[in-house]
Amino acid sequence: MNNQNVAYEEDYKGYHIRILQDDVDESPRDDDNLGTMACWHNRMNLGDVKETNKYTPIDFMRKILYEEQYAEIEKSPEFCSWIRLDENYGDIYDYLLDSTEQQIYALFQKYYVILPIWAYEH
Image 1 (spheres, rainbow, N blue to C red):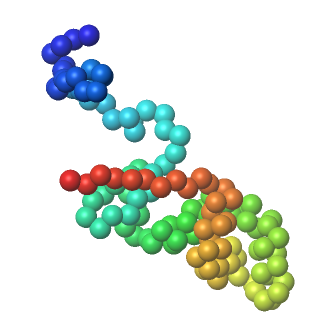
Image 2 (cartoon, rainbow, N blue to C red; image 1 turned 120 degrees about the vertical axis):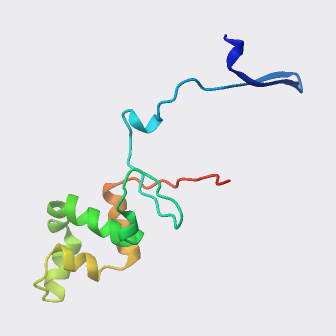
């Protein structure tokens, strides 16, 4: 181990603690990512998706559902019921606009995994 990288060191409750300077300056987000971060913050531009400032989280989910799950939603029983019951002649976009926030969230979760992201601001 290279002692030049040691930023702090101490013995504590029977453990030897060593904090090392990371000499790899690559971002972990540059490698193969399992997911995409979409973040909303009023002072910072965070995450992989940079257009979130144009949308509320629910409107962003509507946009993604419309763009990426159109064919699946069109075959869904919920959409077919919406067309028949209300005699709507709209498309998926109208259906998504008519849906409540809870319905959009539940529909989004059928196709995507949503995990919270925590940030330590200082």
